[in-house]
Image (cartoon, rainbow, N blue to C red; front, side):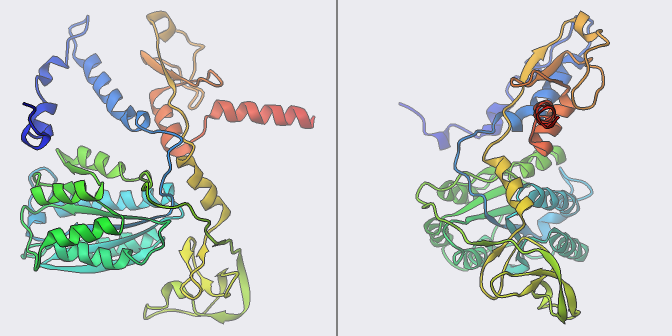
Length: 397
């Protein structure tokens, strides 16, 4: 009789079975070759899992729920403590999130003392989120317990009214092993599933049954960290847009492309309309439909609801729909490693590593670091781009 998956044990119990067999001595008696291979596979893992021709939720609306309870004072896996380390990692994540998802928005919710509070609204301003997160971290964690249900209900109330074509997501960073909820949390989970809100959990302590249920019902992911490096890698997995829901219909979206211009009369910026200090400005982005003024893009107009973006923002979002294929691994023999004419197409350094990478279209060779930079940041092959540029220049000449 087959054993159900939930009774077959936890993933981490089988993931590290006989790990000593992975590391083997090289011909010179050193373990460095095996260690380098493990690091190399870990770096390329995110590149190899990317799939093309998959429908993605490009316009993302993500709420990060941050546990600010007494459990964040612990300093077991993350130093100096969970709160300080996670805050530092989240700052990098927020900046990278908006760099890779320029037409998306993000908000932050904190949970402590059995309550949930909205720290920042959904917006596309990374500096505002990072500043609010740093200010909240300086206050330190609370002595009370967190509330999963109150946090999810707050996120649900803020996400349920968004248009159906938008990707609605929740990322819960949870360090506590308990939760204090006023009602049945399974009703809240059912509402999240009904509204197509995807919930993912990043556990800082241990796997919890209720968190596993939330992610399974909402088609999210659940991971428990092993150390700071593992926590950073798990956060970066949420940079790429998730696959769109099957039952979401395709629809055309009205967008405005305002230019940065000056106005004859100073006006209030609607980005900071709720702040105490909001100076009159005569320069900014003006909505082409209602002529409201904004400081930065992208943003959703608070007057007419039109999505305001710039053309470069929209162009940068397409790299997720058409990802650059992974380069082919090429093993170099000792003679090729000592060849002083084989250089990397990216950094122009000599290719001394035993494994290099070759673009299948232009046959350009790359080192490991340039391969990662091309796929994670540049999203286009420099060799292919230079060939296209040479063809165009020859055509002009």
